[in-house]
Image (cartoon, rainbow, N blue to C red):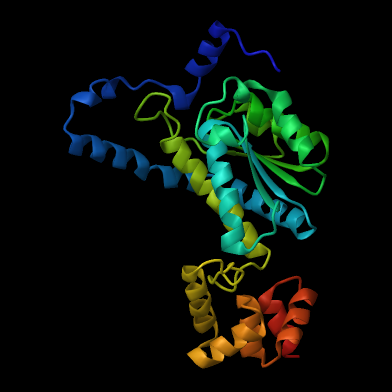
Length: 311
């Protein structure tokens, strides 16, 4: 395990971070009426989107690089500790039902493993070696992408993950909420969303966590758009694993094609319930097997498959 910084050194590090700054004007917030506290929090949150907007060029650059790797079969791996790690696991876990990603295609690693999702694992975030071991267990390759997430930008686990990934030639992204962070410096693509001091000193699950969630939403969603997982703004690769999603599947086919209920049911039956295939059947007038072939030849991009079906 990597040795932890001495208490004096760590105090100095924290004291230099914007996310850890103390705000004397809020020193008596606990004495305010509840509605006033709510207004303060809401006002703080209102500035987060603007801070993310300032980093859009960096986010777009990272997305294009991630999509290129994933288009060649690479994986997207998030790595972080505490709140940052949980946000990565959350984003990864939402990709299979939303975009029908394969198991292991988008992965969330949290320092300390699955139990760290609900409880603190002592010392896990301080270990670069633990991050390397977690990535080695995935058999990381140069086609993969690792996104290190840390509000402070100094978390050893996140930095260790990026350093190890980069040593293998993998694409690396460092997402932090402090300027000049070690994490962003270690990564090929640094994204530093500076949201300022928190309402509660050092509670980076607040503005910093919100900023990280917004950026992760962009990284995964826009990457999936680039990979052809959508048709316009329709989730045509949605996995219909429950009644709500089955109803959503029918609605997506309806919105994409304008077909009536009977035609939609027939198309879904002919394609094993695959939304993208059913849309191709209805719009191109092909059968189920032909829809499958056209989509395979177009790398799963529905627009390309439609163009191929209409020479």
